[in-house]
Picture 1: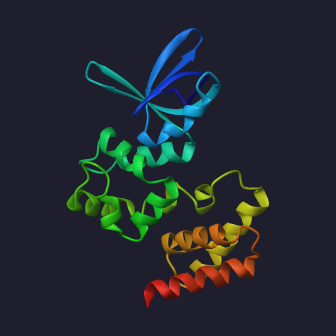
Picture 2: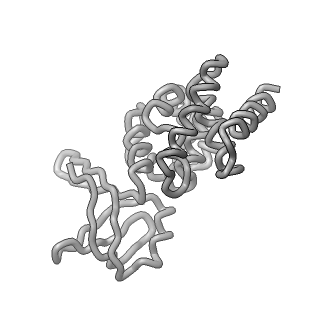
Picture 3: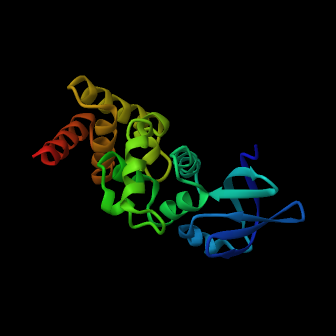
Length: 203
């Protein structure tokens, strides 16, 4: 498996990019939202990849982060979902948005993706709701690098919520939201905010 490629970004088109590695131009299929790397044309970039071989075709898919690739691989495990639908979802939703949409069973938001109808969105939720928190932790949803101490803090708050009877998925979603609201919050403040958001969600 090719874990990642590092090279000069030559060109980017809707849904794909060309990256030069060792004098060879590699065509990488990417979510449409990856157009954000357009500003790096001519510069060195690192793309996390997934290689898929189907019959006589080879496809190289690229992502801006390991977490995005994890979610792509997880979506492929859902019956009826192939690379095209997975890229479509990642093209309109960020990893945190897709994570929360699945855990909150937001069918309307998921079915906004091209080619994903309500039945497909419901199947996605059904098959991923329990798997998702086990594959991607709450701290991986935070945009940008998180200090080790910050990761421990999030884990502690999630554990506290689980001890109160909430599921891992509910706790991870609430803590991620609380952290986004205030990244400088203490353990107690994060716990309070997370509990408040879950209480509102259940009201």
